[in-house]
Length: 507
Image (cartoon, rainbow, N blue to C red):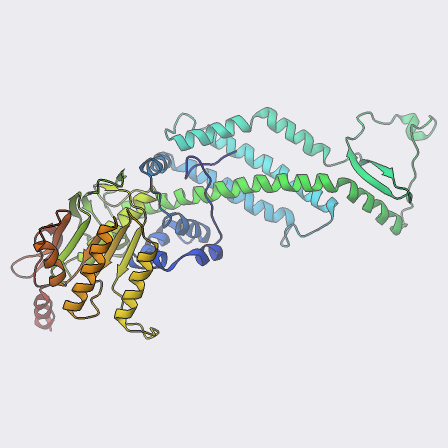
């Protein structure tokens, strides 16, 4: 059986927390830090360590196909409409983990004795049969309520593979593997009279008659009885039994592992959707608009939004978070300048976060959001002074930019926030200019927030580029910020004097 709730044609490859953290490269860690994704992860998991582990794997590993994104969006829409379906299915998966631990105890399946492995695996499969019945019952109740290809296929798979006849057959086999009438094993004699070629046989279906049990009718074979206190003989007989059931024990154990892997995969894929439901609840409580974005092909470049907000900030503050509109038709470079503390960095994070959430098939905090898919989202944000740094800030910025460029390819999106601001404007502008031009020539999209007028002005005055959009953080005549970002030519000042007056006037 296939789960295929996250992908249409493949399973989700997940790792435990330690295994996943070890695989994160520096650019992925930077993206989580710069977009403040930890706040998103915290709301999605609501303190559940397992869900936290899964969403941290799914979200940074975005999809790069509009069709794949729409497939996942459709599944999430179904779960939003039918939240109990996701919760109930996930609950069955959690029970499979808990009951499996109870079956084997704290040491797990550590025994090497085939008889013990067989007995434990049979009990485990009996438990799984019961849980599979529950899974099927829950899913079939929503047959006429889901519309997505993913959930329709998932329910159809359960209905096809977990029929009543299947359960009857599996329960019959498990009953036989209990060996309540004893174990029937055949073997050949080796030249040294030892046993070889042990084969487990199906138990005799004919029971012994009362005459045979009383010994007044000829027996069909020979038998012997081990004295109750003959421990050596009992151990020898147990060894024979173990050799006879060894192959069957391994087969049953593998079958049990296969079913458990199905529950584990289903739990992992459902955990992402549970996290999305938690995130939706957290955002709707704060009264923000949510929408499913419209992904488009990588080219031509499109980025349109109305009422776009930084979801991380929405979850972090009790005050209002202002939305912004954006229309970047065929613009591969967006440069944002303007008033200091005017919302430029928040605006940049809102775009990056919406792009990341779109790529993982989730909704975004906007009235509408349409964007071309990217071949990866990357960030290069200014960093505070760090006493543990072993090099200067400019060297650190250059090293981090080198890491990002080393893993980016055509179609990627780079978010720059005050890049190369650790040096003077002339040098920082020239470095930024050369880096950005090279990235644009390589097919990389760039959104660049800066106070460096030299950098922004050079692109504005250039007559060779028509794919650049210039935005400015607004302020009124009195210096009040409204946190709106509007299309405008670059401004030569960041209006730092406004903040100076405000601080010292209040003092």
